[in-house]
Length: 582
Image (cartoon, rainbow, N blue to C red; front, side, top):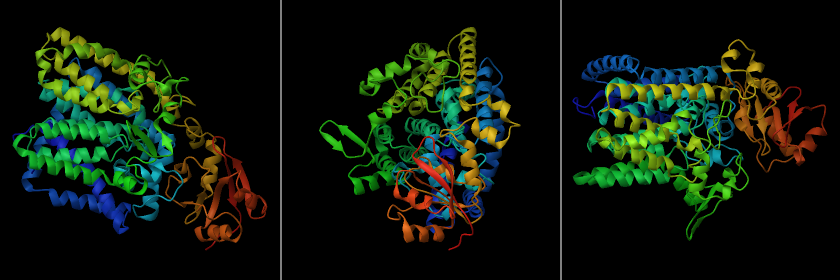
């Protein structure tokens, strides 16, 4: 309905996927406001939305589009570029196997990406999560809302870590669209775009409920709409993509500002429509920034920022993150030096991780000089602007050295290579395509051990026990102890924790049984704590082993049984004995 029939399938796919992601966000917000966030209601909401926008002519067009999509898929594996396409598919297959086989174990996922999802399922509402982890309530959560719908439509937690897959699909289609606009043939554009999935950190991130693949994919979609024709459909796509991008990560405002400025410059006579699109994007993704500004005087709270004479307050600085898992003095380096130091290192086998701090985006990055040279050819003329814009918005962050912050960069590289070499001889193109495929596969092989850094290869865990799979990859250790403690929580009972627990997402049961609750800071010991434990029906509790609560619990061995002390955090876990009731 929004794009004329003469527009290619690739353009409708980009807009359709963007609308679907935005609709997921809107549906979760609506149902959360009503307190109706349950799986059956979410499914009904999805079907109702589909029915509301479907017309008979649209069904006929969709059938034709599916046939065209199937032909594009076949073309993607028929040619010298087939190896690149297969590498991408293998990467997604390995990520899916990892998500299926492993417990959720990514640190950021357990600390602040999954707790809002779990809390929404627990309460049926979207709210500020009661927790001491500031990021879980202060950071923008547009992507987590999409994760919430993904989880609502699953039977249990088994595949919750694969929630970035829809974004990865959208990102690959966006890259193929940019390549096709530059004149790259359909099969080649699709095949080389799929190689983006084989970038090591993209592949490893796909097995974790992080938001970096989603952020990169939304940046790609935004570039597609910002650099396309200025019409009603693409302005709606730009509004939705920019809004989702703004709501994806606290580092998004500068990239969104650059994209919005580009759209404004290109607007011509449609400036009122562009202004409306930018305003809609701010409404869609700007809520957390407005809240941070009103409450703390800093839109990206809790991260403190210094921009010339302007200082935004906050308890955390970016440099604190830059000093983790980096050489001494690295955080003090300037932006260019940090980026150069990171890109000058190429990790070897086992050196890739889903949150690695330094290193190239994988062997594909070795083709960067060729990509730069290829942009000089006439066939790359229409790709130069979009590629340059995608590179700039990807690198527009103080953390540009950090591979997972710039996952769109290898996508821009692939578009540049595809467009620049399209006019070369068949033999030269075949060499380029085979090189991309070989390097993409090399990246998959080098990065595969990163799925299970503490255990055997992921494919050996298919028949392993749950404990063996949990111990193969964990960000906090003590997998057996945590699983056993969590297993004590029954239907309607609660796993409670205080500020000593670093990753609250670890406490929720995969089957959704039981609840998780944060001990209010004012509830310390004595009758108040006893009453709170009874009201919440607490079966297991983790408290600071240096605080007053632990002494009160230890003084009552007939009621509380010590289970274990946390290895990576100052917490101690106790089981509550006997019957519990409100």
